[in-house]
Length: 383
Image 1 (cartoon, one colour):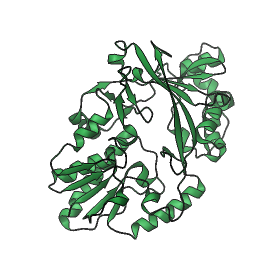
Image 2 (spheres, rainbow, N blue to C red):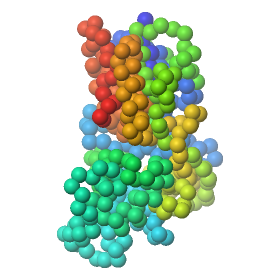
Image 3 (tube, one colour):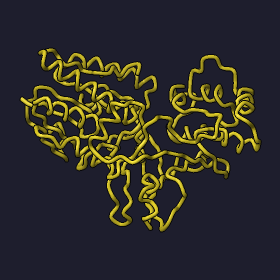
Image 4 (spheres, rainbow, N blue to C red):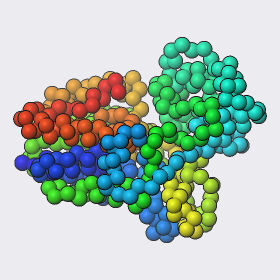
């Protein structure tokens, strides 16, 4: 019998290739007509712009194993991601850095002066219990209200006091003029887009790929199923639907350069969208050769049954439901859950690939030794 990979994004592709290279037969399926999951990218026929169809995906990592791996499957061009933000009718640099602080407070402070100034602004909260408390303890009320409160309410649809502090801990505050969004040593974009990278990963003897194919409709018995789809869907939503935020995209085109940057956040709550993305800026090596531009306004809302899930909400009720699904998965057998949807976690691309590489090694060793494969290679609870 062969192994079934459900989902042709990075998790499924990496694991599927590893199994095939180890001599196993693999069926990889995806219910979409395209490869790459939410990383799917394609060149716009009208303008020639390489478009990230399901929103921008920026590859950045400090993991050399992952960096070496992805470079086997495409030409990667250095790309330094920068984000600007509109707040109160003015444009600022994000993440919050020395330029942002000096601009916002109309001052000319040195790093040490700015650090002391923000420390005086920040509220003394020893152990922040939620997103709002984390922000107030990091940057104080003025910067919080300008850049995070309204944007967060639009993005998540709840009060910031209902979100975990961990969401904000991922974002730095810098007391230099460094405005790169990420600090990882390896930052790049695939020259021909992410879909071609995933296609190359799956281009190996032993893998059969079927797109536009639902797992529920496949009539075949497998040695084991590696499932990167939503864990609640696998169990037919037996305990209810886990909560996600989804995105609506309002596409428009422009002749020339519309906003001069890849991502422009709109922090004010009265603006209904969260940001505008201009996709030719994600490929600066070809940007100036393109006359047209493709842009998207992004609107965040609660994910419905027919929507694409993007961001797991993971509030208290979702955590309780997830525990039931985890317990169900661990007692089921014959299936392992991987990736963002399978473990109900927000994962960057490099983490997704790193976990898939680790899962592949452990999986192949277990198969060789005749051991049982676990339901999860990375526990989704407490992650």
